[in-house]
Image (cartoon, rainbow, N blue to C red; front, top):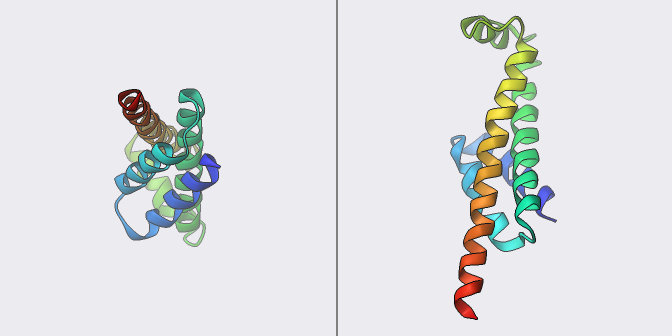
Length: 114
């Protein structure tokens, strides 16, 4: 349940808000739906990463990857696919750490109740 929630929220927020809003939403989703720490991290990683890839491809396909290729050359990368992979890794780490933080926050409050 956690992965599709993070994926959907990150994808929708990518159209409307800055990049970091997806991380806040991953934090909240893991706070509510998180079951295990490793599961929270990997769901956050995969959800935000796939959402960023989908958003980047939706923006890049109509212009035949011209801008993505130019940005890749600025970063001394051979092509736009490698730029996409680096972007997915960075977004995935941000989403994974956010979701893990949300799950750990949930555990802190569960321990206080007992």
